[in-house]
Length: 344
Image (cartoon, rainbow, N blue to C red; front, side):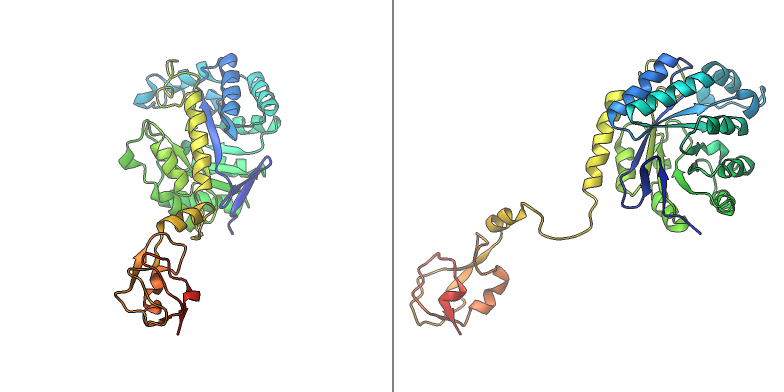
C-alpha cells in the first residue's frame, strides 16, 4: 500500500501541492551556534519551507578508523566530532525556526541521534543516502510514526525496493529523494528521469537532492515533478568545510525559491484561451475580407474574398463557407465580411 502524500507540520506534500523546499544547512555551521542561527534566519527570509541540520553522535555512527571520502579531506570521525551541533544548540535552532516560521529538521545518522531528535519533537525524519540500506535504522525510525524523507543516492533499484518494502511493513508514511552522491555531481550523472520513474513505481512523493553546481538542474527537477527539493546552503562559501563550495548562499537561495514558485505556477495542463490572450487574438488572427467592391445581389466568388487581420470578423477557417453566398448589400473593398452581409 502506498501513500500519495505526507504531511510535515502544516504542509501537505505530494502531487498538486507546492514543492517542499529544504535548505540543507548540514554541518556548514562548523559547530558554531551563531552561524547556525544565521542559517535559520536566512533560510526563513529566503522563503524556504524547512531548514535541515545533521545530528551526529560520531561514537554511535562509526568506527574511528573507518573510511573517508576524498572530498571530506580528513578523518570523517574527526570532522564530525569537531562540527557536530550540541544537544543544546539543536533546541535553540528548533525554537528559533519556530519563531521564524520555518520547519526545523535534522538528519540522524545513528539510532541514538534519532532517539534524541524524538525527545525534542521533530515533525519528521530525513535519512541520508548512506543510511538508505541501513534497514535496522530505517525500521527503528519508522516505528516512531513520524513522516520520513528517505534519500536514495548511490543505491541500486534492488536496494531501494528492499528499503521501501521495509518501510511499508512498518506502515511508514514516507517520501523518497532521488539524488547522486557525488560532490559536485556532473550533469550526465544526475538522471532526472528517475523522479518520474520513482513516482510511477512507488506512488509516494518523490523529491530531489541537488548536488550540482548552479540552479539549472534544480529548476529542471521541479519542472520534472519533484514534490520536495533540497540543496546545501551556507552563510558563505568562503567558510571552511567539505560542503561549502557546493552550497548556495542566502541571496542565491532566495532567487531559487522565487524561481521554483514561478515554475509551479506554470505547470498547468489545460489548453485554453488564457486571460489576456483575447486581445492578442483580435489583433493577430485572420478574418474573411473583401478584395474588391462587391455589388449587392452578386454571388461571392473565390477571387472576391481572402483573409487578413484583424481576427474580429468571420474566422479565416470559414473562408469556403463565404464563397458562393450572395451579398445582401454592397460591400466595399477591404471590408471585414459579416454574416449579416450574406444570404444563402
